[in-house]
Image (spheres, rainbow, N blue to C red):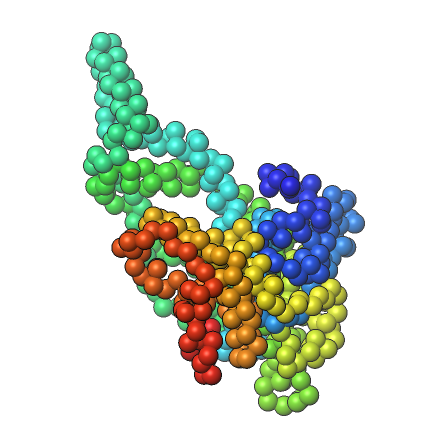
Length: 452
């Protein structure tokens, strides 16, 4: 089996698919497409710069009903490759000149994610040194240093006492002791900023936080807290002091540009249909605004200019009413890889309930085990839940695997409510139990209250 500790360079498309298989049932074509896209990124980074800059990512268009795994495939791919990832709904964008969210905001979001990821990685890198510094600071608070005026004996006694305190600190024996520490006062006066010409500071690439930091310099305040809390304050402060934020931002921008993934959901909602007036005009306008971002352009962010040439865009939509060919030709051309995801059947639901590492059954077993309750699902219970989920999806709105969340919550409602008060700690969930809990839902003609 693939070991997650292996370098990303060693990932083959087959291994990427094997990892995705641990969390997502079926959809082999979509997994194969994203695995190739990720591997090509790795290949490109090994090429000379003059060749690599001309190799653009092959963006992917996923076509399939809701709840079949489109978002989860993209999200898991990002986690696997430790790539900055944002999910945005294309239907939330508005054409330039109208009130609403502009398309460049998704790139700014991606950069924010990249900065936070890079900062946390840098914090972890300096953590050992920061912890050592914090230990010395806590010791100084607990036992302030003094000038012993060449009194060697008292100085030695002081050091012995300090070492005993150090051992107590490390053993966790002083966690409840109260100490006084100076912490940053992070409160900033509220200022209502109105954008200029329909654009706010963010769109103009201005870090409003930096503006405020000059107007209102950092202040500290003295707090009396437990040693355990003081350690957290001091550790954060030390990490911030040890990390070079300019370097973090530089690395983060490079990371967003070369490894970033933007998931454009509901792209079918902005596909123009046959009408040429009214809402469809706005839809086409959004597509044309998206086009330069997907083709490759530079976006102004509060951290500097960010190039979108090598960001991987994965678009997705159900395309129930419209079809991919309803997108403007230029945008269609920017998504050369198209994969159709399969609708889910009874067998898929059964596998989804049991197989993934984070399956719903495993989640509920873990949750209830915290109160001493053990759940045992029989095979016929799993089949019953899967069949009812499939039946409701067929007779009402098809929301795919999301239907299982509703049904599982209903099946386990009483057990979850009673919790630790249950006399019988070992609960067997069989088909009869499931049908008893879901009988009303399955027979009710008006199922609107159970549709997510």
